[in-house]
Image (cartoon, one colour):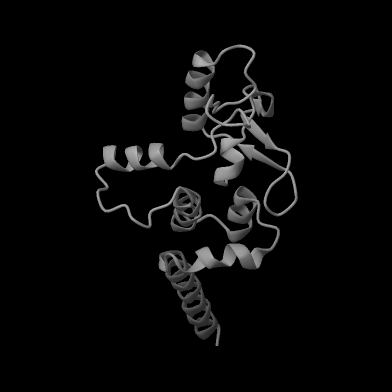
Length: 159
């Protein structure tokens, strides 16, 4: 998800039973129901256990007018440092969103699925991820060429 949506995440938007997070309004103007993976659910359950019952925000902050965090840059730098990333200039939280799309491509997900997971309205927006890994393209072409050659061999046998 986008940083702004995560910072404004509310507990009433998280459905632990269905493993989803409902974002009422996103950058593209639409709502988005995000499937929550096991790792995210685990972290949210741990965080829920630390939350004061009457607080609506998943990432509350007593230092902001909104009541939720608004500037996670200090925490982000701490995360990068703990991960051993010392040259983090230019590394942004949004890179996590891009990494999800890139990993999905690398693991063979279709652009339609990736677009759905990133809440893109237009497949052209998702197509930027298509260049990440040529192996799926090569594998598809290899499979097709083997089938074509096998079909031509079979045709040659019939003649």
